Image 1 (tube, rainbow, N blue to C red):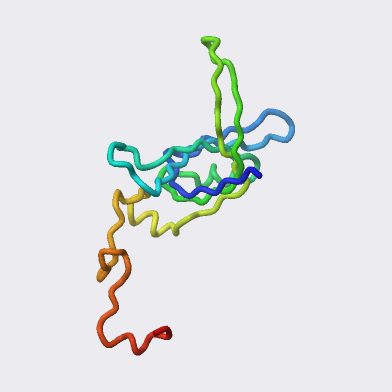
Image 2 (spheres, rainbow, N blue to C red):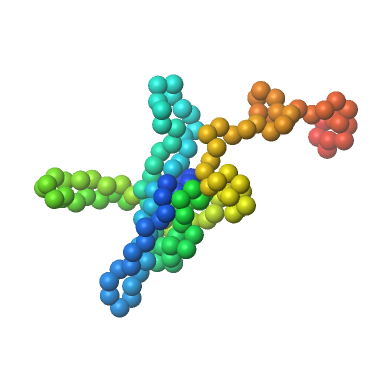
Length: 146
């Protein structure tokens, strides 16, 4: 099985071209910055940059909405390939072929942070060191689970 699900932000506007011929098809290429779950101490990079390609209606969707910083959820498959460059060297490629794409946040949320993810997410007010919210004293009687 070859199945990929990614969530990240476009590193630049999607580049869309149309195939030649009677039935021109949109081909959108873009790179998705996907945050790593864990960061090693000696590494500066905290995201992976995944090359993606989308065809047809999905490519047209990206032509319209694929702007730098927009957060998407992408579903697709990994495809490898190769070509010979101008210097005669063989170059190997790996792309995610997009089968489905959806917005991962609202437009208002995207605009509020300038289209980019904050470097470190602020903790909610009242959050404990473990990331869970503290429950004020006396409110536990109102909770449906005790």
